[in-house]
Image (cartoon, rainbow, N blue to C red; front, top):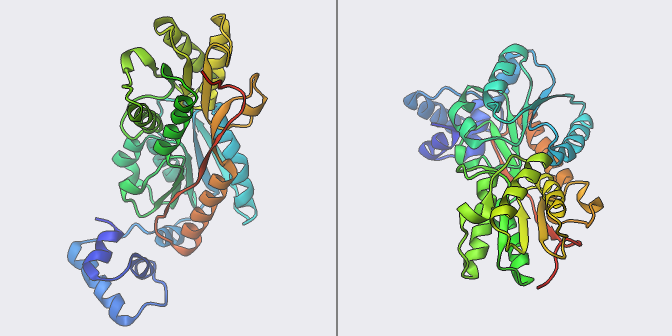
Length: 334
């Protein structure tokens, strides 16, 4: 049971329930009595942001970055730090390698250091679903949506990854490509890779093309070296591909090198589309066509949601930020 259930049973809005839980004014006596009665009936014990702030002697905001060398997260981290610094908030950054459970790490961190808030750059929804209920600090998940999880202290800021990937593959299809390979991520439900694969599959299906995962898809971590190896394997078994969609720009950088090392050219032999529009995409040779996530916008919205939660006890909010297909030099028409 969470704050939304209390709101539904009491007949009052989530905002009113949040103010009652956090002991804030601007609530009528009637509403306060009704909401407290519902909480008592349901045995609801709030784990509210405001109570957390009052009970703890906090250290700076903790930021957990999934993956060392993930350029998209590096692009977000700087503006995030700047946005919080303008509000006199400091951050402590922890980088986590693949395979590490970021939520369990955050739980241990909370017990040792009591951060006033947490930001997760990337993360696996299954880890949040399994363990996040142990985290008391107001938190924000960036580049993945957490609305379905229903935690009152976990906000999220992301783009529509399904729609964005659909746009990327749709661009290749519009340029005449029909043999399109995909590299990056994995098919675990709810992961960023799975969402982007879903969008790619939708675009292909709209053109009467089925995605053969055994032949035309190669999973890998979001690292240049892994993108390189995955693309080599993909090209070795599917040599008729005319285009590759990389589920992240870091994967695309590795894919670009792999294509060239096979004696092919981009876009002369194989067109290439990335995802994220990290800072280096426009400096590659050729410049990479990609999906732009606005790193600064993601960072600033994450900072604002976290500040509202830390200072005002605001309940979880989930936002979608716009994306854009940026056409450069790595795609040719057939």
